[in-house]
Length: 122
Image (tube, rainbow, N blue to C red; front, side, top):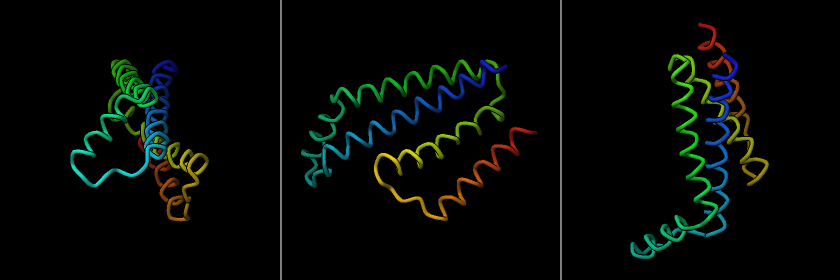
């Protein structure tokens, strides 16, 4: 049973990794250009970025770990645990990108944790 939760945790961590890397590389690349043709070039350049490719690979691996987890856990039990990614992303955004954590965001995190506990115990 612990291995099933390890698969869900791997899904969450791979998802968080991908989001952090994409944010990091997008910030590094600058603002999206206004012209449509420049937007396409900008996004294609990002798509070929090795770091972005690792983020896409992480998304693929997250899908694989999620499929493996779903062979053992009910969807209604496993899926709420993926909301831990919201908390990890918010904390990562604060640490890595100096994004604000407001009292309202903290309240939201508390509600997410309460929701996870409630759903997991049913």
